[in-house]
Image (cartoon, rainbow, N blue to C red; front, top):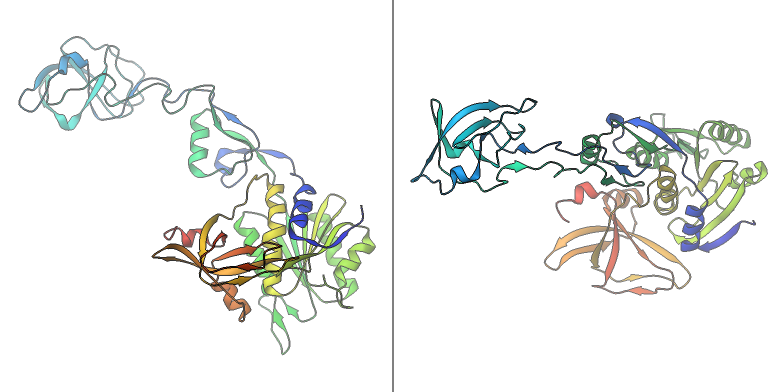
Length: 412
């Protein structure tokens, strides 16, 4: 297929996600599965708990033996044994008797309820009970947490701590997860200097590379990176290494139309399947996407806002799909605009903003990016002015992508 140029954002998004695939599965111990994406539906192979157990430290009783018990009308029962969590030999409760139990202990045969220890008083071989207990009081029934055969987790979902605990309780010690892609970032430009190197006059630190590297590392991906000059030999060598050892290659710079923008041209010469080049979105227009064999390649623009926005809106969805996720890791909520924002009929505009709490709820203040790096660091969200919308008026509701959801948690 011929590469598409200067296409709309939604078409570019659709072409991106349809042309990348998951990378296969691997079996991992549950202890190493945190943050991975589940590659199978999970069913419990055992019930949890496996039998009725006590929820409290106290006394296992028959409900009829403590009926009407109170502080002024205690019931006196004979203690005929005790049972701790983990003990397998279960005694039988007799009429007019009680068995002392700990939380997690199996419910004795014949017992119907547990009276919490704070409503009892021991006197030698007897216990006085000051509260009644209907059948089931303080008892965790067999299978109440998990029932054998029930579905407990779904393929395509992110494995978080409590889910891992649930799956372990259901009988699994290992799980199939989707393999994560390895990524290599190549920042191009004779003016670009790697982090930690001397920055001379007219030079700049490779902030774009560090920004994207940080995003990818936060997802738990393995990432390599390098900085190369605007020289054919250097770029070709870096591309060759990256394409050999990584699943995804991201280049920064060299994606526009000037004579120095040689990265896309070089990939054309290498015979990649270029799917699109330049998208009607701002910032981020000068992005190219294609495949070279089984490798996914994105060429990103060099301006900081353009670089990050192209990454967030087009690269990140592709990487997440390759990881096996069915949804974005960036939460989206509704907020009201504090200022009017203008769009274009043939253009999708992405706007950095600051999400705030106000008397009318969540509001978002658009940023103009006059101070590019400072405003990007200050912004905690992004929202879109869709193609075909010329004005978003003050007070209208917009979908806001949260760039720092953990920091915003107290607000939302």
